[in-house]
Image 1 (cartoon, rainbow, N blue to C red):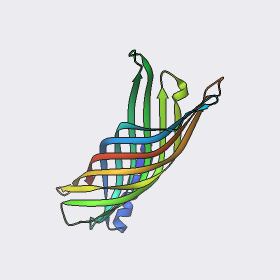
Image 2: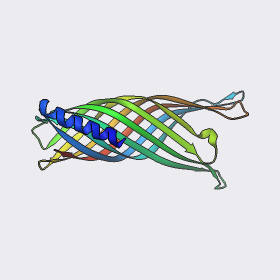
Image 3: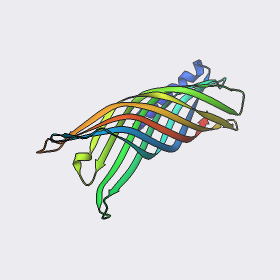
Image 4: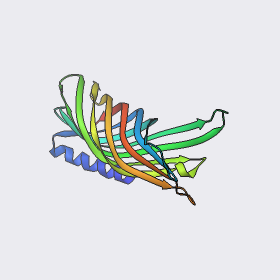
Length: 209
């Protein structure tokens, strides 16, 4: 992974000279929520699909280039989102304890509307790949792994702090196209998870070379 990031950075550095753009690197912190459908088929009984939303803490790194006019930027993002959930019954007994992680590899393109201002609103689109893994320490039946295509849009505002530094405040909406299905051993019970939407609210800092 580190080697891949280095190759991307070097490629962007060389391409920036011919594209009239500057290379930059950045990092992000934020909160995210994933909406997904959980459907349980237990023998001859089918439960209605249950819509669930889990909240995560996340971080990411960006490598890309921004035009010399400060009007558009294209970048690669590596992100990781993690959450831990505990479910207790009425007797305060632990019934379920899960650790959940989502990783994303994205390519984004953004247009900045006010390139001459210190605070510059932007909007853009992105596409890439995601992988989600949920591990239940109490019951393997509720553990699963899914992966698939990601696409969506984002908006926010960036502010210049001196010649090399900028700050980012934004929100991203990503459609996750993936489904996972588990079947309990020695049983007809099946669990189907369909990922729908990942919403991320983030704060970031960038360094421009």
